[in-house]
Length: 201
Image 1 (cartoon, one colour):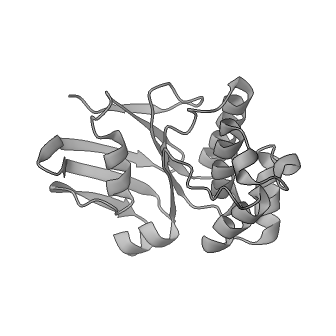
Image 2 (image 1 turned 120 degrees about the vertical axis):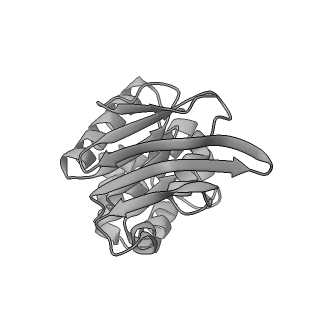
């Protein structure tokens, strides 16, 4: 289990463009970190770097708890990107079960997650027939179905209505209360208490 994530003097580049340098921050168990900044500042890239999908140009990303960074990324974190990554031709149930099994969860966990996110009635529908908010809740259900300590969330609330945002706030609070960690790239405030890391231009 990840007890903390530390960013130490981190720098990221995309192509020939420097996104940021000298970035330092940390988030520990039970805490949320809201990553803010202008479009193109590097918020999404930061999450991808923590997930191991981008290599920093300087500095380091340290995980406290697992044996090494590879184990932390393989077994102890979820990355939910700005795009939901759902297959439109599958039913919501098929998609959720596929994603949950891929990350080590069973059928019971997947169905419980669907109920927690208010999706039980939509499970028989094809994903392409879901609204944008329902698709986002289906993507978020994967986090609940197969619990992992660190949630990396890219604009998690963007397509959700007010009740959906309130529900997601409850789910996030439950995750933190259980010792989880959240790093979220956001434009709007999270519905939970969170420290703010601003990536300046």
